[in-house]
Length: 104
Image (tube, rainbow, N blue to C red; front, side, top):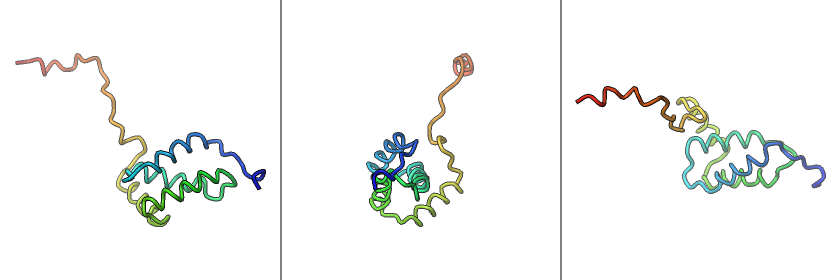
């Protein structure tokens, strides 16, 4: 049976992400979306069984069914969620554009 299992090319990065999801008590929107996409990525995949088991465990720990997760993910996307948007943009500029703040 083990010889029939395939290795997924994103397993290492996904393993780290799944470990973070397992540790989350109250999932953020980004974590809910990550769980949804990983469940879809590994659905029917002939391998990474430990990862698939941990994805199912995360769903149970968060008290969600797959349908509830998908409904929440659809609502998150419909509300304008975009991956990476929750990260604050870094300030760009030389600092000289603060001249108005220097005036008494």
